[in-house]
Amino acid sequence: MTGDTEKSQDDLAATMNALLIRVSEDRDKEAFQTLYRYYAPRLKSFMLGKGTDAHLAEEAVQETLVKVWRKAALFDPALASASTWIFTIGRNMRIDMLRKSIRPEPDYSDPAFTPDPVPVASDKIQKDQQGKRLKAALSILPAEQSEILKLAFFQEKTHGQIAEELGLPLGTVKSRARLALKRLRSVLGENE
Amino acid sequence: MTIQHHPSDELLLDYASGALGEAWSLAVATHLSLCPACRSAMAEMETIGAGLLDAATPVPLSNDALEMIMQRLESDDVNTQQPAQPVRAQPSGSGLPQPLSNYAENGLGEIDWQRLGLGASQYLIPTGDHGVTARLLRIPAGRPVPEHTHGGLELTLVLSGAFSDQIGRFGPGDFQEADGSLQHQPRAEPGADCICLAVTDAPLRFKSLAARMVQPFLGI
Image (cartoon, rainbow over all chains, first blue to last red; front, side, top):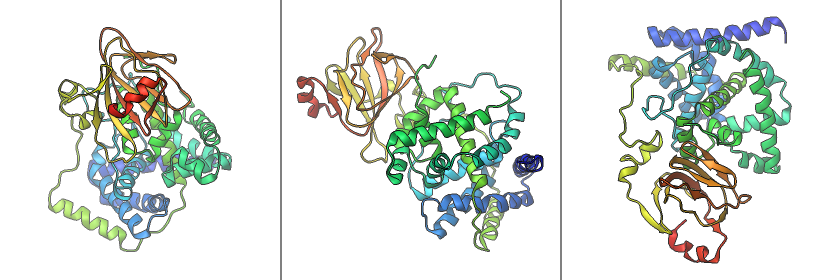
């Protein structure tokens, strides 16, 4: 990967974060439309992953983006990048609308919640840099490992279901997922 | 609270991807409420999910999709709907962490425990999952659960008190994943009853004939 594409990936993450902050603070519809042009076609790909009907997938994308608009004030760039925040909204929308199921989630405002230790000062810088490193690492992941991640995240399959689909022993699927995680984590954890 | 036992990466990944069903997710999510280390691992996995989203092949939407969304945002404006603001949840009074307290609103003091015999009791937690059972289990202080293995998967999250088996000691926040490869006899520590959230997809397999004979009446 050349220095130029690394820079553009860096810029992309920073641009998306800035756009989402404009939506959050200024209710900026132009910024929202720019986010739409980038995320909506990717979210559609994501929603179609399970073999969902195209019309339904598109409805789920629309609901996700309306939610991005309505919940934008909750976006905190110190906790997650715009892509990560929007991914989690899309994932939850898929569970809610397409699987019609409930996803129990921790509630950060719950008094019984065990808070994080004092945050590391370099966290934010690190999050900005994560995007490009992650993209590079994903692109060189062995195919048999990235296949597991795609089946998990895009087709909403558990390890057991992936083993069934690929006709592999569960242990093989688990070890491939572990290897992928190990590699990607070492990339995400750099500068720590 | 020092948590020693955590969910496996596989389970966390199934939760991060959204593939994990409601009842299993209840155990994982309640552990996450208590465990900053696993939340940090979860954040990494969600970042990986976002990386896959960024790398996805874009699929065009229909031409009027953006216009339809913008109309909905306009009607938000007209209805002067306030954008979401962070709110601080009220103490549930249950003493249970979210999201579990959504499922047992009145807390541990008010639970309508159903006796299982052998001094133990349970409360079945209703979820939308079929074939997977979530329950609160109360094991009296100092008492064992009869030795058993598992027909399927069992997730156990300790909420109060503690138990020990040959794997180790499990106190509040600790998480155990057990399957057919683990035959164990958990024993609650003396001093306080051990209360756990337990999620299973098959009945336990008790070693002793006596325990197997009463099992149909215990419903576990």
